[in-house]
Image (cartoon, rainbow, N blue to C red; front, side, top):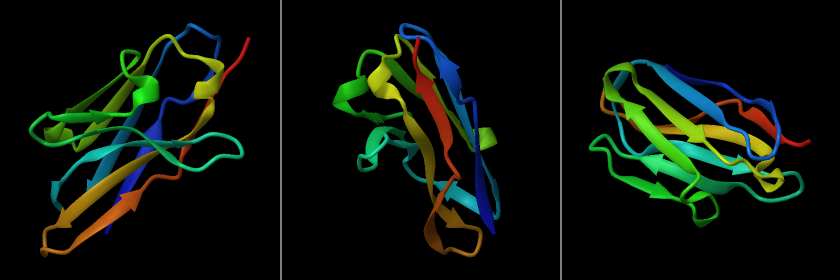
Amino acid sequence: QVQVVESGGGLVQPGGSLRLSCAASGSIRSILAMGWYRQPPGKERELVATIRSDGSTNTGDSVKGRFTISRDNAKNTVYLQMNNLKPEDTAIYYCRAPVISVTGRDFEVWGQGTLVTVSS
C-alpha cells in the first residue's frame, strides 16, 4: 500500500511565499512524474508542476517564474516553492504520485489536498 501526505498550506498575503511538501511512503519501487495540481474554488483541477526522477520539469503557464518544483528521490518527496503569490493562486493543492510498486504494479496515488489561501 502506498500513500502520500502533503503539508505546508495556509494563509498568506499577496506577494508572500509558501513551501509545500509531499512525501510518498509504502511499497514503492519507483515514482514517475510526481507533482502538484490545484483546484481553485468553483473551477476544475489544473496542473501546477510535475518533476521526473531525472529532474526534468513541466510547469503550468500561470505559475511559471513564480513557482519552483524540486524533488528528493531518496526520500520520495517533492516540494513546491511558491513565491509572489496572488489571490488567484488560492486553491486546494493536491499531490499526485504515479507509482510502480515493488511487485511491479503501476498506479497513481493522490494526497488529501492542502488549502492555500492568498488574501490580505
